[in-house]
Image (tube, rainbow, N blue to C red; front, side):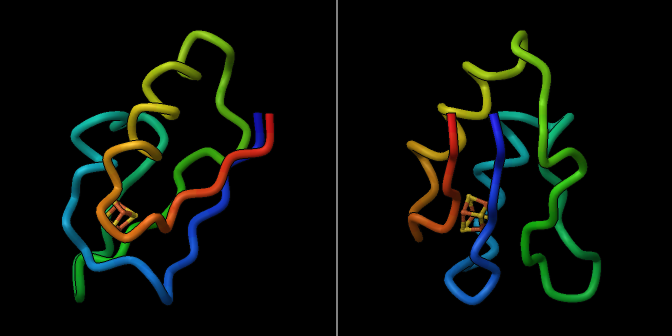
Length: 64
Ligand code: SF4
């Protein structure tokens, strides 16, 4: 799985960090999401899919 964040769309809600804290973090200065791991292991895939589903800005894109 490859994870991509569109930082121009991100509204800094933090839902992705709640869903998958090993993969997503937020910048201290503005809360925009950043990737900790763009190629997460299979055991984190469900959490990452959940993060993409709950992102209110549809800013998370997955390539399976
Ligand atoms: S859930 Fe979406 S809008 Fe919220 S911080 Fe993560 S990428 Fe940004």
